[in-house]
Length: 559
Image 1: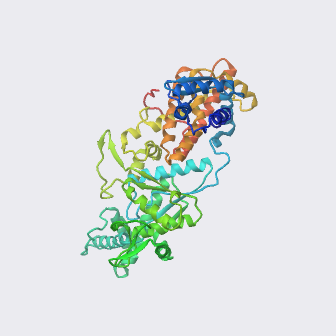
Image 2: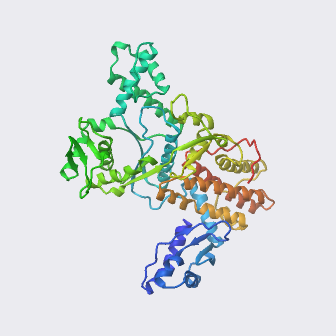
Image 3: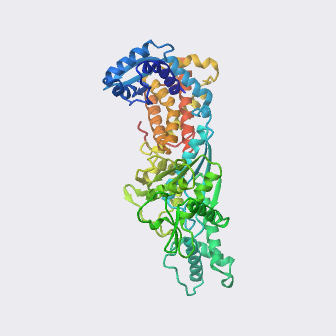
């Protein structure tokens, strides 16, 4: 990758100089500069070295510039100093065209890590209680988790997706009781809905199926619970499949309890001095912890029932015992305080707590032209994911959910998601891909055959305009973008990258003809557009979004 090659060249050129001054070369960044800067890469190295060298950043940058200009195998055409001391690098034509050649050769394998990482990662997401349909907030977690899994897998990690089924405890008992009450209601018989039961109309649908299959004399609370869980899980699976998500494993909390895993791990905690008995209950107390016990750290209640915390301890330990090197959990932002507890329990069990990474995400507010959308009648108190997917489509849902950082509150405008104009980000990116496909169809109609062999490579040096170089630079930073997504555990950087790439393509298209009278320039520009098309298609795929080759443009697309 071109950025890796630049870093290797900088390290080779500057490490001896730094060593001569008895300082290590710090970990510096190589970033794409803002659009108003005429350079390909911005570097903060001089800023980092200013303090240990006791010089101003600009003076350090000047020293570095002199060294780099004299270094052999220079991949740059220019080195400039900006502001207080940022170094801005411009690749020479050979370096830039070589990276474009690499992309065109590797196609959708572009951006993979080399060597491939050996780390096994388990991503657990959604994991909604199977007591009702998925709501739109679950949809955001689903899109974030699946896109992150796709990105990590593309980079070369071994990735598994897991859904943790909370099918044990008081909530599922209430589910069974709610079903029995709804069944009696449908039969016009006296019934009493549990005070904290599930009130949504979706329970009436489950009850209709239950009444058809089970006469009243055969109904039991346990049987009703099993039936409701099965039906609701089927609906959850169906909604997720419609959303483009497949899990590798569906892990049952009840199975964890049944096989004695909770008992086993709590006993291990006891042996390690992390469990105390008080007031008839078992409590988790981290070794060395002082102060009053937190009631939320109860492991076993006085009535003998395990708490969610106890089963979560066993579940996360089980993940690591299955051989995963890193655990990524996606939780709602309201679970923030739960993170140190789970990590503390893993540490008490002898695991490295840093193997658990938790991505917190905010819920979603739905609007229609800026007006809040009312609650769903079918669900009772929330808007179902399937309702939104049916209205705006999977692509818009997946892209919109991925467009903002997880910790950012998100207002999802349903009308905007349906627009076919430049205002709609997913349409804007998809239209860029379709527009390129249209150009290739026009080329074929005019008898222009795109060369895809070694004869093409010398022609790439003709891509010298500002707009062409901007596209090459943006393409070269695609692998960097994917690595940042993996580093920060969020796909929103990719969604925004695709928007920027689409914007730069449309800008290029407004300023340059692709099918020109110069046959070599035409081939070079077709090659550039093929590279843009490849990255748009790949990037959308990693977000779970399609890349149409034909789209109907109903409104003017303003670049």
